[in-house]
Image 1 (cartoon, helix red, strand yellow):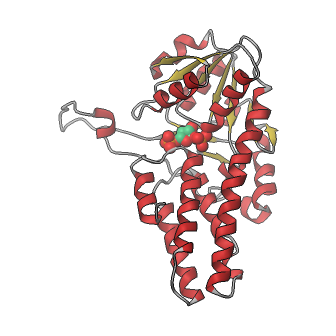
Image 2: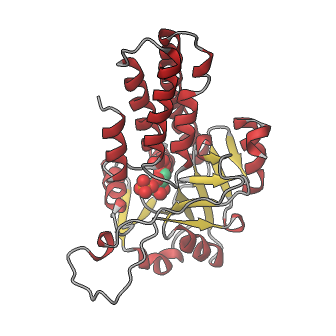
Image 3: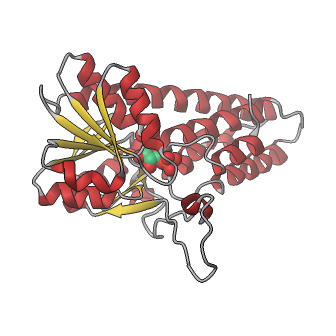
Amino acid sequence: MMGVPDTATKIKKMEIRGAGKIAKAASEALREEAEKYRGKDSDEFILYMKKCGNILLDSRPTAVSLHNGIFLTLKDMEKGKTVPEIKKKIVSNSKKFVADSEKALKKISAIGEKLISDGDVILTHCNSQAALSVIIEAHRKKKNIKVYATESRPWGQGYISSAQLAEAGVDVTLIIDSCVSTVMDEVDKVFVGADTVTVKGELYNKIGTSQIAAIAKAKKKKFYVCCETYKFSPVFRKQNVIVEERDPSEITGTRKISGKIKVFNPVFDRTEPKYIDAIITEKGKIRPTDAKSLSVKTFGKEKSE
Ligand code: RI2
């Protein structure tokens, strides 16, 4: 069990990573923090939990899953009149959020695998549990598929994806990110995850995703996004999505470079809706143009407009 500060540090350092995993870890940390709270004053408790939520929120700025996970865990806590009542609400919200996330992944895999045909060559980028669950489900359904997994520099999440796919028995080939164009002629479909989907249907996902989408479009290949609805973003409707930039050393590693050279290390990029064929969620397969109505259904009109 980890408290809020430990969880926030682990998320910041990428020891816990992936849009879904950070949201679940944040929700569980809030639950733990609530359970161990010993004070008696309900107003102080609410303030304390909000502070905890903000600490977690600051750990990574781009994935709206983190915001939504925290929001849904602390939702309606003010309705509790006493500390035990507030605790009960937070604990049940958190359990529901984590259970719903797991159920959502199962539904996404069932919906998404139908888009995969026997003999398909698939490309995936970075490490998305939602995208991998779809691919692995297709394999489980005995579809003969081949997967290219990009290395996903600088963190190399493609090594995790390749290992997970190989472990599941999928025929997987690891490629460097700049090999995407080379293999795209052979690829039939691209499946990626999401850190944030805006109400305009734009996708924010691992750096390099937009290049892959553009190459897929140019070569008339399908491009699918797999994500739970808590990655849809009512909060970013007015403000722009903040794209996280991380330390240059993540790119340069141990190489010595001149101090005159600047290094730019954005973690995510924006893929325009026109490149996306469909977004696969637990509520069904939608077009990017339907992102707003799904957001309204999920988070309410007021938040999503
Ligand atoms: P799931 C990851 O971010 C990748 O961008 C991945 O596509 C996305 O989260 C969604 O992952 P990072 O934490 O929630 O590796 O589908 O920077 O697992």
